[in-house]
Image (cartoon, rainbow, N blue to C red):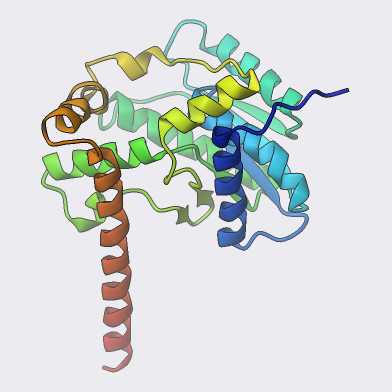
Length: 250
């Protein structure tokens, strides 16, 4: 008999976000949803919530695990993650090992290789959507990166909740919430050492810049940055709509 964890606020919040993500994406009964899972708290929490919610929405749920091969023992971590996902009830669970190039630096190269592999697995399995575990914290970091680089509005608008095949249902939830689900559910999550490597700009923003802003400016900076992305995306959608109407009227 499977012992289910008691329903805590963190578990309820992540499950609700996944349920709303299914609805927003217009997924239909029988559709296959894949969770891209690294084994970290964010994607593992997303996988657990998806495993719970998908059957109730009459959806099939599987997963894809990407081994970037950039750290010793990465193949073992990928295998352990795949096993956890199978135990959660996800099927199929696919592991892909990728070759990370050098174009754009290690972060960008790893992202390029990862998305290419995810696209390949989605096509192979006939997946209708791929769930990504980006959180409110990731969104705030993305906005701040865009601001520091002097990027245009589309960069500062951050990540889309629905971006073609990809769904990001956790953009309104904090990293604390995803870790809470894992802890409340007894799920051991992997802590990527790259996430504490200050050689990466995003890590310095996460560990130094945002905490300093929260201290010096006041609490709520992370939420305010994520809210800025939401507002700017709405403005861009309106501008795109108006431009399309103007073009049709020519």
